[in-house]
Amino acid sequence: MAKRSRKYTCPVCQYQKVERQSVGIWSCKKCDHTFAGGAWEPFTRASDANNRILRRSVDGATTADMAFIAQEAAMNYERELANRPSLEEEE
Image (cartoon, rainbow, N blue to C red; front, top):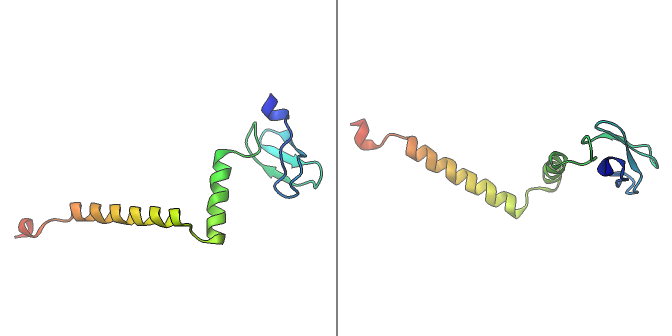
């Protein structure tokens, strides 16, 4: 109940005026911005992840993202090599 009734910061006007209207519906009393969120909190782990993804698509990939992409590519390459029949098996 404490999480539900607490006031949260609005993502638009940055004031602590966001209150829960109903399950998953949150609204700012100052700027009247209404948005979907979690049942008990307006911002969930999934919404944080989505915000990071959106920010990356706008700002570009970070160094950590590039390292992760390179690591995934290397792992896929190793899997392809392991699954490819060797020259000795073909003959």
